[in-house]
Length: 407
Image 1: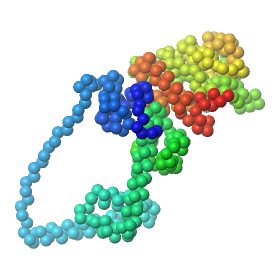
Image 2 (image 1 turned 180 degrees about the vertical axis):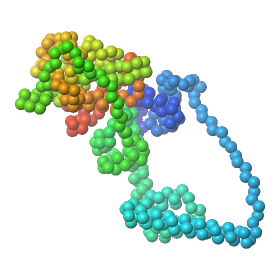
Image 3 (image 1 turned 30 degrees about the horizontal axis):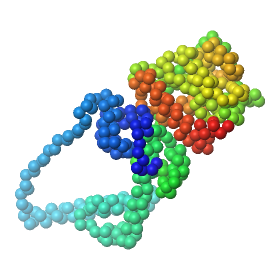
Image 4 (image 1 turned 180 degrees about the horizontal axis):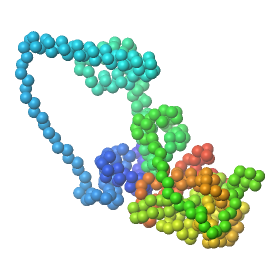
């Protein structure tokens, strides 16, 4: 993302704003540090977010003052020449043992573990002047290299460091809207940038993200939303491998549906999703407070209203009571949709719907909404980003909306 581009409040999603507010209030960084880290424009933009969404009182701004203490030590008594000589001899013996010890450690790392620590570590010691009176020539003599090789390494390291910072800044800009976008998808986005300095290999990108603490850590949680012990009829699984298996060859041939738990500060919420099995596009969604069939069916109704073709359509879901209910099955009959359901309790029989649930919750919905209204707004923004901006690996890094519109 190019630097110097002006951004408005619309460019920052509500999820991103709440995440920044949460980091500042937890003390992980100040609001000015958050502004500099994420490239947020405007002097008081983060402060406005804190006053609007924060749980603390930010009406007077924020100031952190640290107390300073000065320790006063008594002067040492002067030593006699003999005492001074003995002290220097002990210091020399200790320094010699310390040097021999670290030389042995370096040799073991090089010979037994294949670790090369000379370049980066020696440069850091010299640039920070950690050893008083040590010249570059003497340090090069210790390392067994020439001064020319040392300065050449520094120039190469400076270029790589500048490139690493550019890449890290690009990743932060992308993650403003997609907070948990994976490294491989970031690598694909980097290859499409006009600046050649942003094009690096996949393994180096992993290293850069690790150094800047930008790797995404997995999160696991489980909340049961399926009730399969009911009196309604359970339809057969039409997507199960076999001679009668239905496979989507174009959009709007097979839809998969599922319900997922969505925590909020006001109580439990639920998200119903309907996804096209071919294009991976979310064609219908609805956030609701209960597990009533009418609430779950609203996502399916929205998807049917936006349907562009009239080809034979299969709706696949688990065997939950909402999907087997008379209200939901009535929608199937009215629109000529064939119903398909999992034939057991294996979540892998509806793996695509489960995967879309995980993407929304683990990558895009990073902050817990306050209530139902805020949750619906956050989910709407997340669905738009998923459909229109997030590259999908199964679609050869195209977006679901682009694949859906291609037919």
